[in-house]
Image 1 (cartoon, rainbow, N blue to C red):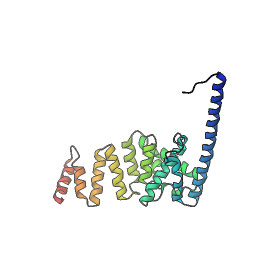
Image 2: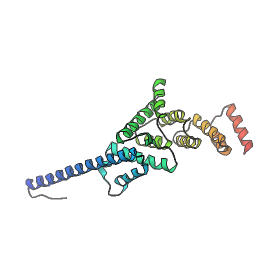
Image 3: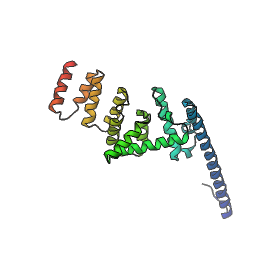
Image 4: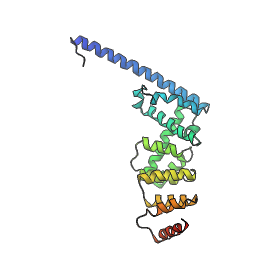
Length: 234
């Protein structure tokens, strides 16, 4: 720990620290503006892979810790991680309907707001409005997962199930299985198990369907009959 010979020496050191903080803030602000301009350019030209040029600012060891304390820059990083998976699995990117930085941030925030409505399920009208918005944008399972993981949600059972019922007509069968598997790992209730079993039967994976159905603690007579029928197929 540094020692000071006088109050004046201490004040001079403090002044130098404040000047460095101001310089760092100014540099980060300029860098943030450059990020926005880069995103504007990439989205405007639909050059999505060029957005990954921003990843080093978040992921390299000597990257800027100030960015980790900013909600907006955190969301840029979240969007980049979503995009990586969407391109890898050949999905229409979540950000593909946005033409600039402000429009993708608005879409992101509106998606959170809509998902919050699904989580709380306060009224049928609110749920319907949320579903209308979420089905109007390319909400992939990766976008839905990253947003739910990184924004503040509490009732994952409600959120995941209501989001599933909303997006069910738009997601592929493998997407639906993946989404419900994530939900099952967090919170397994009978609706999830039955839906997973149904999806696995649809793709003729009867052993997985049987595995899920036999996890139901007290199956009804109809479910017991279905389990029996599946057992004969194995």
